[in-house]
Image (tube, rainbow, N blue to C red):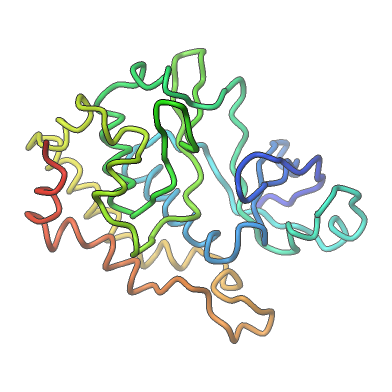
Length: 251
């Protein structure tokens, strides 16, 4: 497991303000710790793994990293104690990218746009919003190769999110060419296979989460606001209420 050996700066990008760090594997990461909350770290790891390993989305490679106590103690980076000691979430830096905006939307293949939209509906992630004037899409555009990158899932598994609201504000929710894929039987069948595979892997995936992330206190007596049975119920929804789920997505 890589260990962070330098804290370079605090990023001002995003609500969780990750830290730019170097690790002993020679790579640099945007790192989230206490600033993302323990619940957010759990959601980030589960959703990121489902998206990257089971849904085939272009999620940047990420790692569980260790932060030594001495590194925090002697660092002069502002608010470094928000990073915390112990296990953190690190997303590998993707070079030469820019913030994704409305002008990039038509450069994304409709099928990929549909997969991202469906993935966010599946995990109830209402944090990829974009209007004609821009917004917080949590997407990056890499001009070389015209590649899209998907990141930031710390707000996933929110049971208060309604599909109709998510669709209306999502970066690809009003893109007809993407929405049409959601009515395609072949697309649906493949997506359901990916969902089922991800759901089957959930128990082992949850075991990979550092135990301390499940608790708000060092004594591990106060649990985070992320009930694992609710995560399973959210992910089961398209499979156990299949007709209802897909009917609401058709155009």
